Structures are given as structure tokens and as C-alpha cells.
Figure 1 (cartoon, rainbow, N blue to C red):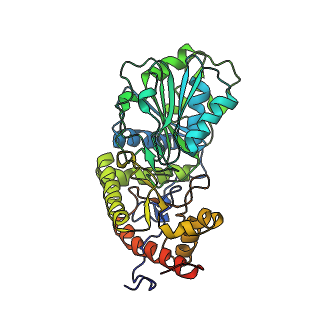
Figure 2: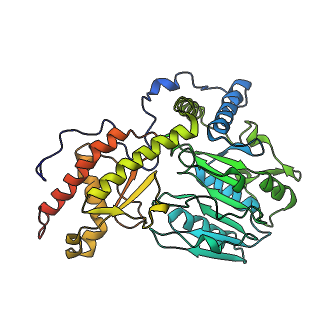
Length: 392
């Protein structure tokens, strides 16, 4: 293939957004035909559908019976804010920050809750903080997978089994795609819109027994908005974990979540979804290795995310261009491929280094990624050829 000739095949599904992510293969709007619409979610049938989401989630993710699974408002953001506002305060806090969402939680702890005994353990985009510095006597707030940097923690070995503090984990682009050690996670949150390809606005929260003990033994000194309240009369309020949601959920989104969970079961549960994700990442890694002009933003292969794959342009030619061109390189590639119908929403996150972000989660077909790679090469060759000073 000549560098500037267009590839012959386009991805069957060009949706590679890192959130909301592609729907599961074979999805159509007909899966929503039996949604419990125009009825009260408090009705026994509505509650049964909500309970089905929680029960199937527990089964697919192999969450132990010792942990509670609940549906809460406002996507992963709401679930994380609920955890931060409800649990932090009695101990020092270690904040792990190496990308946008870790920075968001750090900002809330420092500037909204205004806690004093806080340590910030930071690393730039593409790197991971020194996990050995985490104090087991402190609560620790972290993202399992940095959705905007493509950097994840490699495992839970760095979390002490005899820790005194709580682990509060934002797992929104890791749940259903990575092996989460539930015995090491006291609070875990995510949303339906990532690996499962579900709809937004609803969050999931999983509480381990140590988190429940904290909730029932500590009362925060600040006012607690209704949407964050997990305690009633000094005891854990079981309502969110028994299908009595804090606010009115979208029963259409609930039906969609049930459909995605049924698909996950048919694929072999979390292990099957991990296998699909890893096959996608293997294909992407092989292409990156062969492409002279692009590389992973994550420096260490052990820390590279297999879901939210973040890439940087390393072609030396780029260094001959001005800063404005460098800053816009990902958007230029993304716009060119969107115009061709070859890829949608693949520019890097707005606050991340300029480049590309390509979702490799379980709802993406490996064949679509393999069809995408020649288009990426074509886009870069085309941009160089059309730019003054560029060579094809």
C-alpha cells in the first residue's frame, strides 16, 4: 500500500471512545423493549430489576459476600465523592495522583474537605508514583487505571494486608477488564459507561467490611448532602444496597445494564472480558511496536493500561514544528479519521499530553482495531505530506 493511498477496509464499528464506550457487540435498541418505563422504581418489579443489576454484577466480578454492592447517583464521580465525603477525616490521607481523575479527587480532599494531614504522591503523565511510599496507617485514595494517562497500578501487592487505613479506589476503567483484589479494596467505584458499554449517570459502589465499620464509628464534621448519605441513625443505611436507590434511576439505563451483564456472563464473566481486553491490547501493542511514529504514553510496560490506551507521537519530524502544531497533533489525526468514518473520539483527553486515546476494552472487537491501524498510519502520513516542511 502506498503511504498516501487510503486503506481498503474500515472498522465495522469505528467507536473507540474511552467513555462513554462502545456498546457490546450485537447491541441494538431492541434490548430495551422490556424496560420498566413509566412505572415507579419503588415497585417490586422495578426493585427486582435494580437488584438484578447488583446480583449479576457481584457474580460477574466475583465480589465476595463480605462486600456490599450498591447503585448510587452521578456515575463514578458521584460514587467517589460519596466515599470521600463520608469516610475521610479520622486518619491521614495519601493521595495518588498521576492523571486527571486522581488530580480531581486530590483537589476535592485538599480544597473542599480541607483536610490537614494529607500527603500527595504524584507522578507526571506516563509514570506512576512510588507505591512503596504509601503509609498503611493512612487512608489512600487512588485510581486503579488512569483513564486519561493509560497508566495503571500493576496489582494490589503494594497494599498492606494489615493496613489500618482504608483503600478508596476509583476503578471506573478497570472493573470488568482487570483483576481487582477485593480483599485489598475497602471501597471501589465505577460507572456503567466504561468496560460494559452502558449508559452514564449511574455509579456503582462496593463497600468492604472495614469501610462499613468506619461509617458506623465516625461522623464527619461537615454537612452531608442527601446524595452522599450512607448512614442513618448511626448505622449503615442499607437502602442503596437493597435496590432502594437514593434518587430516581433511569430504568432504561438499568435495562441496558442488565443486557450488558448478560452479555458478560455469556462471554465467561470477568475472566472472559479480561481475555477480550487483553487480546485487543496485544493487537494494539504489536501495531505500536511496528509503527515508527507513535509510542505508548506509559513508559513502563508493567504499568500500561490495556483498556484506555494513550499514545504519543514520537516522529522526529514533529520536533521541527511549532508548539501549536505539536499541541494539536492528536486532534488533527482524530478529525481526519472521523471525516473518513474510520475512528470516532480518539484524541487524547483535554488535560492530557497531546496524542491519541484508543479504547481497547471488552466491547471492542479485535478485528475493528486491526482495521483501524492502517488508517492511523495513513492519517499520519497524510498530515506530514500536507504540512509545509513535511515529507511523506
